[in-house]
Image 1 (cartoon, rainbow, N blue to C red):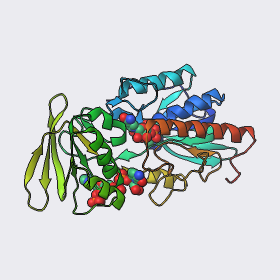
Image 2 (image 1 turned 180 degrees about the vertical axis):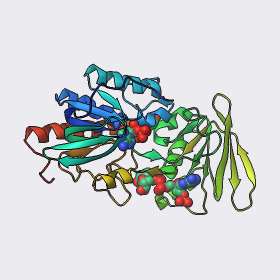
Image 3 (image 1 turned 135 degrees about the horizontal axis):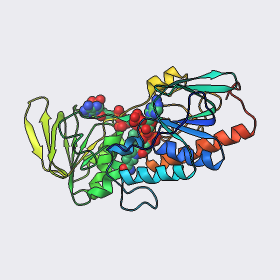
Length: 326
Ligand code: NAP
Ligand code: NAP
């Protein structure tokens, strides 16, 4: 699913109070609040909605009932449009300090100046890259058990992975689904033992080790997942309506390194309680940060955005400038 919105008519050299890098839920949450604080704001991103473009029904955002992800993107977008925040469809290559400003360099539209920067570049969820995965994304293929588990009540599902996300996901799904197949490529889990124990004790969870998914098939929705035992090459077809791909994330390591943003040992951008990074007047929000690792939701991304916006407003109001260290 790709939604295109009208790109902002801004020109290279324009100056802003804040530039938000990214266009996912964290960016929209940030923009709503920077606009309400009357900060002259520009959003720069390539894909309106970010990871939401790969989701189906969204049932975990307070007040939005029966919304498809595409509708959520439209609702978020319309709120930002109400506040007349320009949105430029472009990619930010880098930003640097120059005098009293940050200069933000984009791929196509040139450079912009800003007093503050709010980074909301998200993460890339790892993909299986098997036939059917892309075709059934949002129609049985999910990348977030916490988000989508309740949608699979009374159904059979597969969870793929051996880390905390997969095990935690399998445990949660076992409360909704009639049967959960947990498929992992090795013979041991990297997840915390407490999760492994919890899942192993669930009567409706079947753990299948040394196995990988080879194909996802269906009609309107997923109907079958084919797996292969990597030791004996035997294949097996699982009749399920859902497959949860919980095989980890790619944090924005290159982006952080290029822009001197400090990261934690896993590559996520380090922020304090007020979403401040190591750079003065640069904030980060959403999945790209090291905040609340393992609990990544639209509601948390949006709320981190609101906090980052407040911090930018407060720091500017108090006269902080780009030369000061955090
Ligand atoms: P996000 O959705 O990953 O959005 C990141 C955005 O930044 C994307 O638009 C991305 O565009 C853009 N971007 C990346 N690098 C950029 C660059 N250098 N210049 C400009 N733009 C750049 O992340 P988020 O907003 O932090 O959080 C999304 C939240 O929604 C997550 O917590 C996730 O778990 C949650 N979610 C929930 C559901 C559900 O069903 N409940 C479904 C999906 C996601 P590209 O994509 O083109 O790189
Ligand atoms: P992760 O720790 O990187 O684990 C990814 C799992 O997916 C691994 O078991 C890996 O297998 C498997 N995998 C990777 N690529 C694969 C592929 N192409 N095909 C099949 N399997 C593949 O990711 P995560 O579980 O999402 O956790 C990310 C971070 O968040 C971790 O630091 C985790 O501790 C944290 N987290 C914490 C909590 C919590 O504390 N409640 C909850 C969720 C996440 P191998 O084992 O063979 O490498």
